[in-house]
Length: 248
Length: 183
Image (cartoon, rainbow over all chains, first blue to last red; front, side):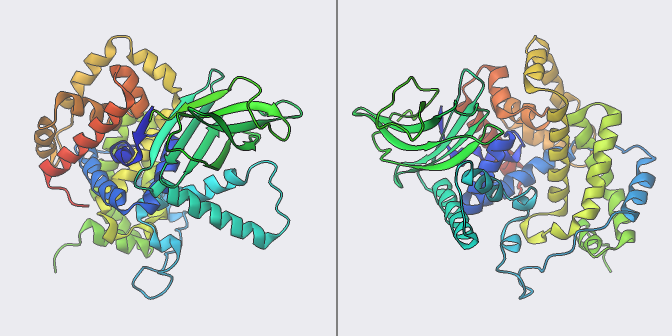
């Protein structure tokens, strides 16, 4: 199944995305002004639907709420954009709906560095995180960004946002068992000419991984995942455990 | 001295003004409780979620930015999302799909438009919903009022995912235009 990521504005505004998709789409929103504008309008529209369901609250609720706020510390106000302070920070630069949750980028990037990446140098790590995040955002915001997903027989889920013009894709895998001992997962970009290796990975202890896949996707029919001996193979040696058909 | 708008009150709340909060509560508690109850159904749970949301309005008022949308949109977005989160954590989606898939779905769905409580703007919303195609209205209402993911909606209606996504978007765009909503 593939779809234009930009059409998710309606499902997002209606809260009809699951958590992963919501995270993915919020990343896209950070980078896509057209979608951000549309989402702001559709959230306002959805709020009117919500308002039509209004009914009198239980009479004793007010006492309980007022009592609780009396004991609840408020979050500190952020400097507002235009106050001249802090307006360059991402916290104020992001629209309010982008701040409803933990920033998606942070979550994705933490997953993205994943298993087996040893970073010895703090500066190196900060740089690589920033690079990674910028790449995610650029791919998600690409005009030709397409969305593909699949469910494996073991219940694992693979999702890809693909930008053929950039030759890059963001891959997010969930619920995949760790690769067997002395083996690794390997990614393949599959076209009429065969399978081109696109990197090896393993999943974290929650069965998740996210990473950027580079390759020539213009003719690609699918992205596949196989189990290979540690270090990877130049050609697949087993049947794929996951195939994301690009439906080009 | 005109009466303060809900946006004004929320900005005062962001500065720690409890009297402003009490005044805002009187204006928004019914909106919050109503949408939570529509999605969550169970009155006791709805009250619990509504209380969480109303306290969250107090706690996070500093995040409200009037340039990005109205106080109502901000509060209802939060309320709807908390209600959805509650429903999804209560029940695996497969159970819900299964339960609803047994023929009750059509009846439940037909009742949705009919049971919208009489409320401020209720007529306008009803009129706007009437401008949608049946399929758009179905997709929007199953997601927004019943809390199904678009994937579940696709399964319930036996329709391709891409079609459901498009219907939800087209439906909301049409509602936006019918009600003259600006962000």
